[in-house]
Image (cartoon, rainbow, N blue to C red):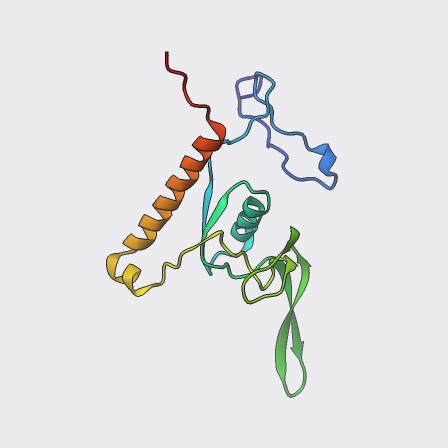
Length: 167
């Protein structure tokens, strides 16, 4: 809340000049952040901003990505319609693309620094579209996702939480 008790102003998360953005600060002066583990669920229908979110989580090492390779829609295509006397057609030209922090090799593709047409390959591969999942309402997939989340939490506890001292 702001000083008058209303809602806060929007939090700027991007800018032409990255130096102009400062982290959100807590009232005690520390950087305000989400510290728990993150597991991002993706599949071949994950596109657009959801795909970019998964890319940032993976590239920054902030979260693990679970599922199957995304659709590879990390660009901004513009349709161009071509019409003539005897024919009609169209093309889509990619005018801009999201680029990754560094080149990443995705199985079946060369190492590239973008996600357009290659997608995001998950850290933990698990396909929902299997016979077992379709017959069991996805139980095996949900169980695997739950186990992956538990492993990430256990790893975080081992790495970041100090054991309690018993007297």
